[in-house]
Length: 274
Image 1 (cartoon, rainbow, N blue to C red):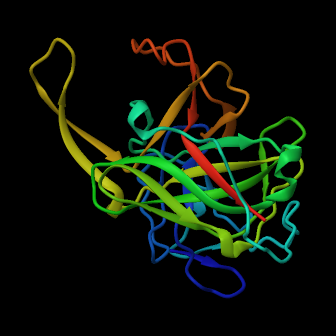
Image 2 (cartoon, rainbow, N blue to C red; image 1 turned 180 degrees about the vertical axis):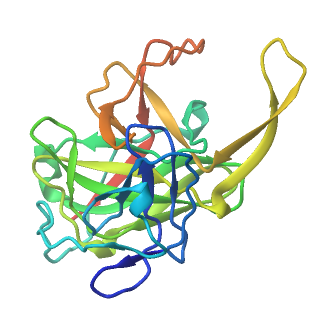
């Protein structure tokens, strides 16, 4: 079980990775997790509002403590809102999207960068995030992390230090998350909206599939939801976090004419207000 080292409260939705490997899980609502490995490995624990912890697997006991972050949030400005104007950026059409980021049995995070523009000065507050989701289970949950940007352009430091949990209904949906009450102003050096998959029982989907050229039925597992993507000519604004590191998104190699040799950019629409 994972707890806050100061308050001793349980920490839910901690993402847990085996360093440099595609193995991991997520703590549930009670802070509990299960990770099966055969030999000693370095395990990385990551949760919003807490210091990332690395520890050898043979040193993990029944209770693991994470230390709360004491650093200031990156570039957050809080002031009064008027909410008389709105501006939408990153608009997408649900019917035009048929390509997705999905999650198998390993946790990962994918992030999209939103660059600041002078036209946002009159609608500087973040109001709503709309994401194209596709879920094979009812009410699958995912986490949203809001990051600042480092000198080399990758996600770094939170601009909000708590989980923002989204819930995706079953099917292909536009999932909306209202963040207006957080009073977050668009950082002048831009910021990332990151989607974190949660490896929890509620998100688990088991299915049967066959390999090409074979009739044998195989068992598959995914953790929902999948996140819709748009084709992009560059990977400048798309990053993924797996094996404990941030990397640029890869180029698509599929047969779809629309996406072949393009990069995937998450279908995220952001509403700003004043």
